[in-house]
Image (cartoon, rainbow, N blue to C red; front, side, top):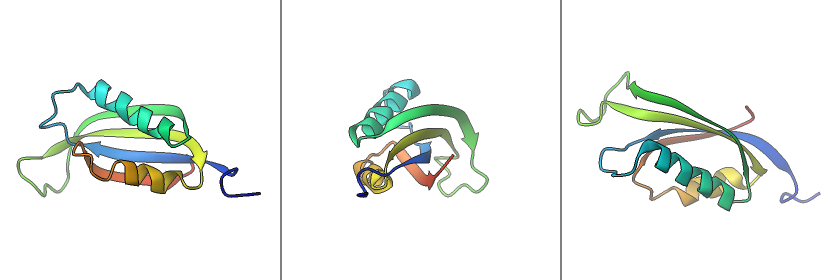
Length: 101
């Protein structure tokens, strides 16, 4: 069995920085779903957790962010590919990809 045929469930938690964006949050979430689909994954669930205040504010101009979780299934290379695709995206403030739900 090769690594390409092994599929696992993943959960990606993201904090979005929409300060300079003209797009609506739903548009950004749809774009991120397309990125997940482009790396040979299937999105099973998307949770928009809403705007939340940070417990420790690092940048006083950015005291809160939009929290979104994506549940998807894909190959074992999916977390690395997902991080690489979104590495230069300005709307992503933080990203955490975990195995399993």
